[in-house]
Image 1 (cartoon, rainbow, N blue to C red):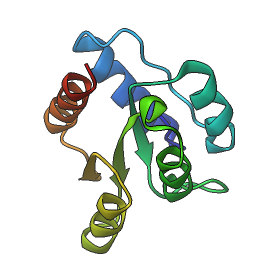
Image 2: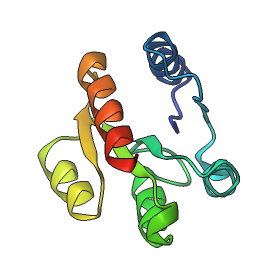
Image 3: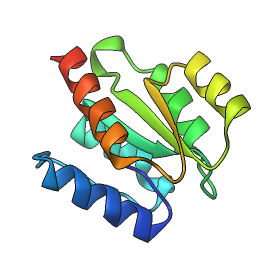
Length: 118
């Protein structure tokens, strides 16, 4: 999970862990995303779209260039709406959520992505 807002990052991490997702890695510095993705090879990622430096669009584009077997499902969260949704879904995102995120829907998307990857 990559989110530059520490309170959003911690909230989503706590909710995921409370729902039984124990292998949650949280990253507040999007500049470290590429190395971390290569290191842990996640099945699913939750990525904030608008972050300083490296954006969620940058991360999504990089993920989509990885070999398919190593390509995680990317769930994008953003304060933007329609245009951003269309752009990231066309670019390969699994799901898109507008902030504030309904955590029940987010958990459902994570679970769905994990089932698809299994």
